[in-house]
Structures are given as C-alpha cells and as structure tokens.
Length: 449
Ligand code: ADP
Image 1: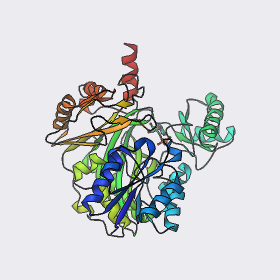
Image 2: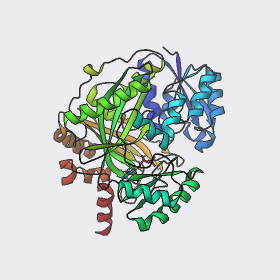
Image 3: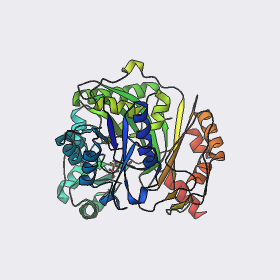
Image 4: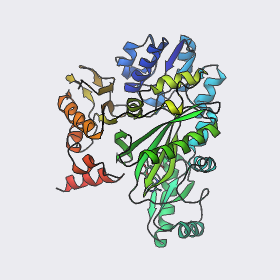
C-alpha cells in the first residue's frame, strides 16, 4: 500500500479522496493555488504545497509544479480526482517515468478513450453497443450525405476531440448536411484545434444512463450498476440517480454484464464509467470516462462500496475487494449538485458564505468542502457541494430529498438549491419520466411564463 498520496485537485473531491486515504492510514498531501490557501482540503491534509497562482493552467494543471510537489513531499502516488489532469495521458506517463503511481488507468487507456473515434471503435470491438454512424472521420460533403442516407435522418455531426457538447451540429435532412458539416468543423477547430468530425444517428429523446465499472488491470472487472444522469442543462448533469428508474433489473444485469466483460477484455485498471444514450430499450455508447465521476456517491450509497478505496487498492496492485456476485443494489439514491449560481439565470455567484447549515439525519450525505465564513473564489467551476440522499425505494428517497432541501441553508451567495426544491415536486420527476431534454424544456417554459 502507498504511504503518502498527493491529491492533485481541490474542492469537494479533494476532501472526498483525503477521507478515503485517512481511513486507509495513508498520509495525504494537498496541493493548492494561492486562491485556495484556506480551503478545507488544505486544512485537513497532513501536508500542503502551494503550486501556483489562481488560474488553473498555472496551478492545478501545472504538471512541473505538481511533479515538484511530489518530489518535495516524497509522495508515492497521485490521485487526480475528476477534471483537471484526471484524463491527461501525458501526466500519467510522466508520473510513471518518475516512479510515482497514477491512481487511475494506464496512459494508453486514457488516450484511447480520450479520442472519440478511437473510443467508439474500441467499444464496438469490445462488444459494447454504439450509436450507428460513420466508422471514422468524415471530411467531404458527398461522404457525409452517403453515410447520413445510410443511417437515416436526423443525424448529428460531432467533433472527434469533443468535450462539453461543443462542436456538435444536427442535420435534419440532406439539405442541411453541408452547412452542419462546415459549422461543426469550424467550431471543433476553434474549440479543440482539431477539425476532425464524425457522424452519428441523432437520438430524439434518449436518457443518459451510465455504467460504473472497476477493473484490476489483470483481466478481472465488475460493474456496480447504473446511474441515470438525464437531467442536464447545457450538457452538464445537475441531478443523478441510482439506479435508473427506466431500467428493469434484467436490463441492468444485461448491460452491466456487457460492460464488465468489455473491461475484462481490455484489462482495464481502476474505476471507469461507460456512458450511454438509452432510447426505446436500446443502449448506445457515447463515451467512457477513465476516472472518478462527480456522481459516484449515488452508486456508493446503493452498493455500500467505497469507490475511492477501490481505486487506491487497485493502483497499489491489490485485487478487487468484491466479486460480481457480492455486489447488490440496496434502495435508491439521488444526488443534486449544489452550484454557486443563481437558480434561475445560472449566473455564477462566488463570494463569502455568511451562514451555513447543511442538512443531516438518516440517509443524508453531504460531500462539500465549504464552511461558514468560506469565500468561494471566482476562478473555478461553480460546484460547491453535493447533497446525496438514500431511501429504501424511490418515493422514500424523494421524500427525504424534500426534507433535506428544506433544512439546507447557505446564505451570502446564491445556489441551485431552490431549483431542486421545485424539481422535487414536478409530476414528471416524481414519475421518473424524463429524457435528456426535459430540464432545458422545463427551464425554457418557466422563462416564457
Ligand atoms: P461531449 O464529450 O462533448 O460531452 P458526448 O458524446 O458525451 O460529448 O455527448 C454530450 C451530449 O450530447 C450527450 O449527453 C447528449 O445529450 C448529446 N448527444 C451526443 N450524441 C448524441 C446523439 N447521437 N443523439 C442525440 N444526442 C446526442
């Protein structure tokens, strides 16, 4: 096992990782920008190193600074959390060259899944169902038209190096193809410096359902069931649940088994998430995230597993702590993301938290790094915490969420908590009847009213 882990992240996830390390008896090193000197993860770590000024590119993305912090503190492993350097194959490679363990998969697996075309081809080879579409990059309008006619309209043109939903254009008919192709390519070029695009069938009303996997890197892998993350705004998840209200236990076992077998074949190491769009009973792979996800706690809650603990064990060369047969799903869990944003305009709202009273009680978990008097810096994403509730079934879980939201007080800044107070009473949400467009439509209706 490791003796000292450096946590190359900030906020709630840095604290989450720190807690797992402490429970494993591992020393922790926090790194932080000058803007985060008073952050909770810095206060609670055994050691801390300032790695640069506030902008992430100069601190949390600054590989030489982080390598120096490893050197100074003698850390023998690095946990990257999510975002920042968590899916940076070069970082994983550099750590390996310096005999520091990257708590995550191999650089090669990060690279494969980071390229959307290669990821899709790999998924197909591994037996994972993918969205019908082009085999690789498409450059000419004639090719695009031929492929689109083959798969049927509407189609979606997507950037190979895509992320955050950028570089994506829908074409409803052949007349729109030329325009959509040109637009997608120039947007991709501007956003990612790469104008490679590919074509997929456009799914009109899918749900976003993802499967959590764990692999030991030696051919053993299990799945921890699914999460439904269909409630999104601008392709950002805002509410996640486990398990999906849309799947039967049989469908869950079937797609879970496909994913676990694929990870066995790939000899995948660590935690990963295979993301699907789900429509009319069919799953379509969109991407794989080779890291811990924001929404991992809902899975932890219903499986009674600690995913970070598993990640650390796997990286240390230990076997998975559970077999597939030992993994069972208990009850229902929902996570809502508390962002420092206006709940109607979604304008960022950094600043000082003057009063803080988190919810508590049975079945409530809060993952957050904030405290009363904490000043939220304006430089990073607006997620300040996650409220995770659990119940024996979905109705009990929703009732507990209502109760927890009523108790939760954050003053001095604006948060997305009022949005969830409304959502939790919406008939479609109560019925579990929503797709990936539901939230945007709901917000647009509210704006118009
Ligand atoms: P990114 O890496 O940019 O986030 P993804 O491939 O993960 O791109 O897709 C982001 C979102 O775009 C999905 O969650 C979904 O809302 C939408 N999307 C992607 N592919 C399709 C498709 N084939 N049909 C309909 N919507 C899609």
